[in-house]
Picture 1 (tube, rainbow, N blue to C red):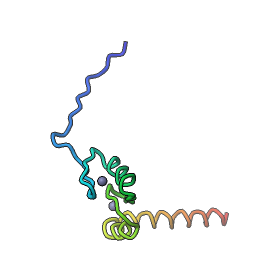
Picture 2: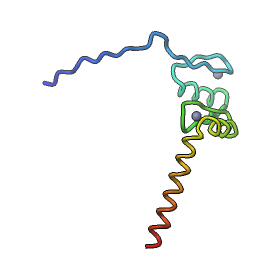
Picture 3: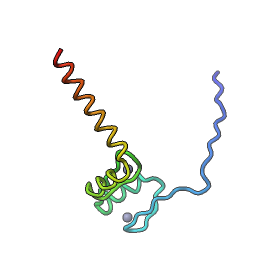
Picture 4: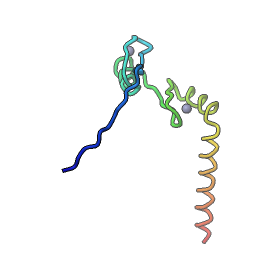
Length: 93
Ligand SMILES: [Zn+2]
Ligand SMILES: [Zn+2]
């Protein structure tokens, strides 16, 4: 017999709610709100690959990335350069 451990789950006293900006409906998760926006209002939100924020257009997303995630972008660019350099180096062998 495997005795199950007692797991204490604490829920935050104030539930986080996501409100639809268009019709005011409330949702428990951002995923639910996004699904609602897409199905009810035809709004497609583009999620930032670096954080939890989402945007209406790629223009806004790029603006946000260039302002808030310069460090992450620099790391990715450096990583890509290293990979390309490695491929060239291996190809020479
Ligand atoms: Zn709505
Ligand atoms: Zn972001």
